[in-house]
Amino acid sequence: MRLALTARHLFDTGATPAQAYATLARRTHAPLRSARAVCTALGIPATETTRRLNDCHDALLANPRPNSEADTGELLEALGVFDIPKPLTPTELAVIDLFLTAVDAMGGIRPGHQHGLHRWFTTGNLTTAYLSLTAAHPIPRTGNPTLYWTTLIQAGELLTTTPTPTPASNTPSTAAAPTPPKRPARKRRKSTPPTSCAPPKLPSQLERVVEVIRTIDPRRMHDADARAVGHQQDGALHGHRHAPGVHADHRPRDADRRHRGRERPNGRAGQPRHQHQRCHPHPDDPR
Image: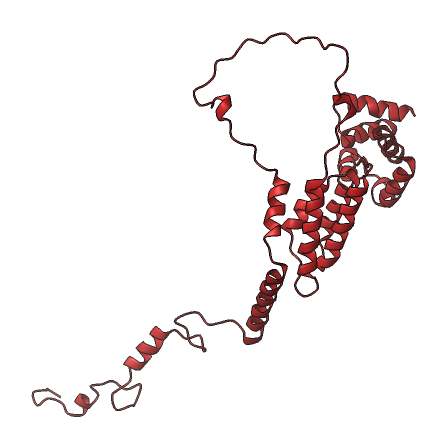
């Protein structure tokens, strides 16, 4: 319990979970207790803390190296051990189910991307997870592009239509709030537009991505991916094309022209053109 209080004090001073773990591990020389104290200070449930620490105990906490507390803390933070779980609404759970369906329709996903999705699902950062899936593409051979894009469109519509809950602290109170002191007016720069000419509010990045995906025809995307795979297979079967100016035997055309220039008109190659002059010397020749 003391370690958890110390971890909370470190958080109050601006330390990150990785830095708090490194400080506690240097003091106690007990990496498992230090990691558990950081999780307790963050408010992570005990069962979830035990599960996370059991997954990484043998690799990071069983036999720590000397002076490796900072590196171990960063690894624990990167693995999501210190991620605070967020309670999800039924709509957010439905969005996550659609994301999992899209991952299955992708036909294969990189381990790093899958780990990032798991962390975003835990922390409730569904917008970032959605944008990462829209940036990826399904595999034509093993995936289902039509189901992939259709599922993402449904998930995006749920994300954009879900109202953001208003925190209870923002409700107005009956007591009169004290009037803030007046600040001196600052001079407006010439480059700053007046308030009446302020630019209109642009849609969020999520709404723009959803609108773009709605314009995509999944069948056309599937046909384009299939054609790309077909071109790759044709190139693998027929081999590489020869560069311009080079024959199949990899001999330049200029070399062929020079080779043909050495041939005599009568078709015998390798002999000089004026060889007959050697057989008939000039009469004035001293020989």
